[in-house]
Length: 228
Ligand SMILES: O=C1C[C@@](O)(C(=O)O)C[C@@H](O)[C@@H]1O
Image (tube, rainbow, N blue to C red):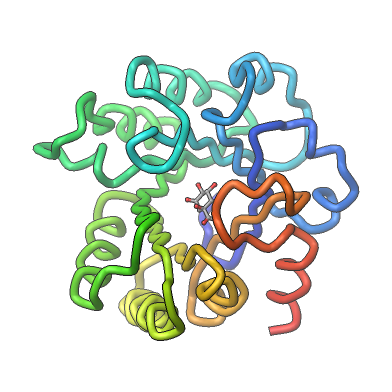
């Protein structure tokens, strides 16, 4: 999957949601959060749905539940599954001389050898960095992956405007990006960022199963994006 146009991801730790009508009607892809699943590899083996899968095994140091021990091995073990078309890897794990050990550079090579799309992601659960930092983070993510993803926390609307501006700039420069502001003041960016070029939206099938702060449920986000 190339993510040349907007794709809506049903974000979940439970692949069984793919049988729900709301998911079948509105999702283009499933983001399978391995770190939120009971037995991720077994669930993937049992998966025979039609939706392609983006795999994520979010590190505990980046807001997820996965500890470094075995995290990348589990992630890479999903690559042989036919439904898996894309993988999310944290930018901090991809910098060859970065602080994060183990490094995910060889996992990225393995993903590309199998034709998977690599989403290089950056999250900030505390704040929205300054414009200059947003720009450099997003451009580093675009350099490291096929899609550069930036999820920050907005504390007011000007944070949201900054995020939308860098989304627009990067898209105009020819990059594929996925952006969103987490938290209540940034919520609308989930619907609006696609207008400025963001290529992936994330939403839980049911709002009580949100995988990040401020997410709309899948049906609501689908309707908002469609309307805009
Ligand atoms: O990185 C992202 C985006 C996200 O954090 C969000 O804000 O919707 C949700 C995560 O599941 C996903 O991996």
